[in-house]
Figure 1 (tube, one colour):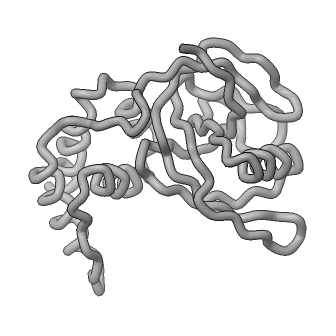
Figure 2 (cartoon, helix red, strand yellow):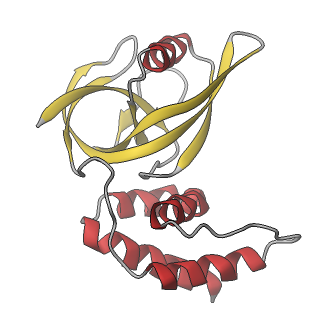
Length: 187
């Protein structure tokens, strides 16, 4: 089923269950985010394929993730700071508007509350090994598979193009490929 969604193109890739912090300062996105927050409505996040985060509308990748605002705080100088949680992946079918912000028609890739199958024990071992490399590590690894998925998604934020490739994979391929990326990082 196709639906419409407001889009926030970023230089970041959001995965389902991942929490992302966003500082919003452009008027068009302040208005969009405020309406989404007031109406408990999700918005879409897509990695920018061409263009920049500020200025003219960027051209997004076709695959993105819906995001639900979980907290919003007003800042000085007409800015807001939000935390949003990824919900499910979508594919952009059609551009509906570019101004004041991008609005698109999408097709959902995942069902609500998607499950990404794979070897979560192996993924947890990779996360544990990576986190022990950090100084003063006092981080507790979540036991819930969706939380683990969100944590690993956040850990991969420094490689947006590779993370975009993961986002576009079939649901059965994501965890094995994600684990492979973490295992390579440990070598």
